[in-house]
Each structure stands twice: as C-alpha cells, then as structure tokens.
Image (cartoon, rainbow, N blue to C red; front, side):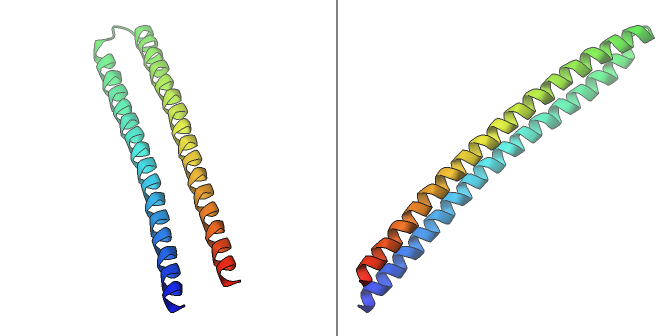
Length: 121
C-alpha cells in the first residue's frame, strides 16, 4: 500500500516537472522570437536615422528634403506595420501553443484523478 502511494506521488511529481519544463520551453521560444523582432526593428530604426542624416547632406533644397523624408517615412511606416503584423502572428501562435499545452495537461490531470479515485474505491 505504501509503495503504491509513493509510486503515485512520484508519478505526479514527474508529470508536474515535465509540464513545467514544457511550459518553460514555450515561454523561452516566444521570448527569443520577440527579442529577435525587437532587434530587427531597432536595426531598422538605426538605418532610417542614418539614411535621414545622409539625406540632409545630399539634398539641394527644401522641397527635395521634404520629398526624401516623405519616402523614408513611408518605408519606415511600412516596416513597422509589417513588424506589428508579424508580432501579432507570433503571439497568436504562442497563445495557441499555450492552449494546447493547457488542454493536454488538464486532460492528464483529470485522467490521473480518475485513476486515483477508481484505485481507492
């Protein structure tokens, strides 16, 4: 009887650790992807800033400056929109992965409870 109890507790502990490890992996993957996106956008901002400064040195008049700045703003805005869309997709995928994880472990917990109740009855 005591061995059954310890085996059951050991199994629960192992399942809990496995679930925590899986959750940690999901969180780490999501974090890495978000950081990659942040670095990418930081680089895009630095590039836009450098191009803006370069434009200041090359333009001949005010109208040309405004035209070049408008082009640069449009390109930069397009990059931000794309990055926002990609980030939303990334977060949506992470949410789906978390939902699957939760369903899997909720089902496993329910099965373990049923087994324990049936074993005790």
